Length: 227
Image 1: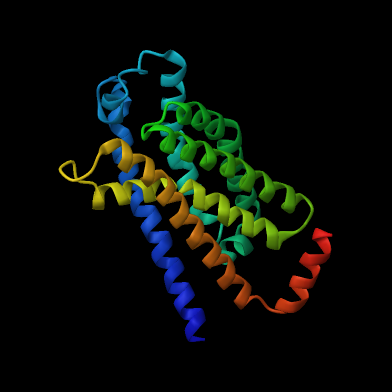
Image 2: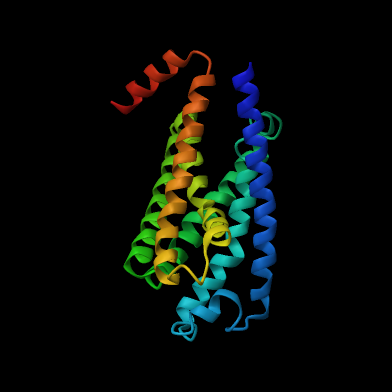
């Protein structure tokens, strides 16, 4: 009972944190509604801001990513699923389409021109590949009726989605222009945000397994479905 309560509290804190940081991200994104090429992050990308394809993908990404973050908040609640099954499916489809059709292609192009040198570029491209893989796997498993694996891969997909938040938290807490080389810090931060989020995701998946009823039977079914 104590462990279950601890998990519930952790989930509430996590949801609240993602919501708050998503709202703060909206505030950051609002500066780009002026389409001024010298504001915010664009000030550091003057070598590519005049490339219409890069700029288009940049705006597509920043104006749609918050929808992914907010959509994911509702999708992991068992109560919400029970009471709003149809809405759960609608939001889930919107989340998947947003990622696979809009953000994965956009982020692939942006990743090729990422800050952080080769470390940053490879980090962003791997994030993008994992994002597509986890999201597509979640879709394929739910179509097969394997809800357990669908949920696992949706957790992993959302972990990659929220690397945008983790990246900014680390940067705001630890980056110092006086002590850090910006390019090196940026590149390492890409990898660190991904590592932290996937670590948390696998921890959540493990905890969910511990609280599942008939755990042994479920694991057996999963093993058979993999064969």
